[in-house]
Image 1 (cartoon, rainbow, N blue to C red):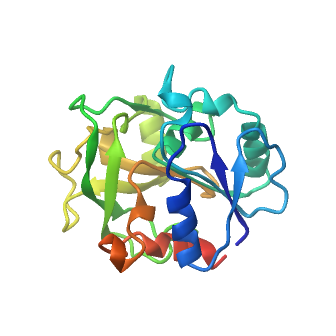
Image 2 (image 1 turned 180 degrees about the horizontal axis):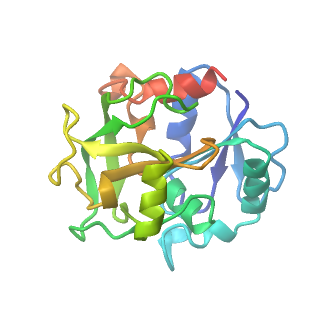
Length: 226
């Protein structure tokens, strides 16, 4: 798996992504947001942080960076894209995934563990988990409340494009487990061709026992195995 990690001004999770991918055997390269050559890459990762200070809307300015034209071309030719937290926000602002990430229902920044339920395990991102399995991940966002209109939500559900939901540790979908108020408890969604995944929590924060667990490592193992 030849991977590249995009770096925008204000992004601060790029080194965490390097660690996660290296733990699984990949050797990614950093790509500054003004570069436009993504040739030779299998996977583009858009990490978390506060691109351009989250001015206007989270991810709105980054979505118009020069590199994003190349990201759209990468997606059009079937390349893999993983967007985490601010990366998910950038993907929605760029039109590569539907919906929007709004202010958390509590109107507070959330920095805590959560649990995610795997809704499908037949994708390149999730094939080392089992469907219905829950795993721990880290929330660190102020605008993670996933929103889409009813028609879009119906399409996501009907086409099986919800990848992950907020859940209890035992897999129940409850309002208490949905800490940011996301529609349908959605934590992550897929593109129709299953090659683009956006999710709000940070699997890269749990890839080594020294981090407190390895719940997120299967995602990067699955990607590195491609």
